[in-house]
Length: 307
Ligand code: AMP
Image (tube, rainbow, N blue to C red; front, side, top):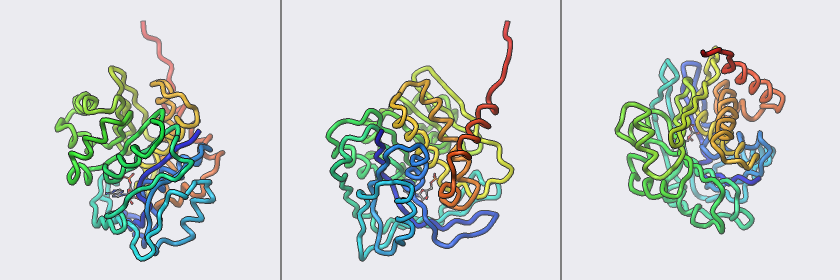
């Protein structure tokens, strides 16, 4: 039941209609690891931070039983920094800054003991870093999931297309699916993307839920209708962490089980958006998660007679 996660561990600065943060804990791998830790899988992160990264953030992740032995610290370097501003509808955002800093020359090293994970979650990062981690494994994981974003599509398209050849599940948002496929219809986009390597595709649609495509099968999971979405940052990564964590835990990689995994991912993501950054995930309890899974069940459960 092990999940190896690769991705950014970062400082984020976020502006929403509700307020503005200082530099706070963020990064794709952080959200993925914290979400997966709610599923009690053995999760380890491969990433890099600078000497400016606070010990209290590392302690928080350790408290969540995340293995940090794969996080390299560059003492005289600066941690990856991202800042974004959300529009009033909270569905779209502008990136104000992406400072790669220590990521620029990052050569990931998979620690001993992590070379045979059951599931590999290649979080949003340079596709060459994603590929390098995959290449260092001694056995191909039972499932490889990859997340990426427009930033890498714009800058490293060829490298991204190459790593996709080795991936089972791709998770991207609707805008990214359109950019990747050059198709507006998400169904057409999915068909095209499923010829690019991954056999399964998840398109995340923020507050409009997520679509799962595999062959001719399609499944849709709604997002929880919330009164207030406080900060959507990390929702996609939390979703990916819940999805891959659930599959690592259950060791069942069928389409039917992926449907359940998507519900876990959606339930966890619905917490992340309730507060800034990782704040809500950090305090989340098992009871709250179970309660919310129940809400999801009733949200989509209906009885209909078709004759
Ligand atoms: P999400 O809201 O799920 O798309 O993810 C937001 C997280 O992604 C933030 O915590 C950022 O630190 C991180 N992030 C932003 N831009 C990048 C990038 N170009 N590469 C990797 N991670 C990024």
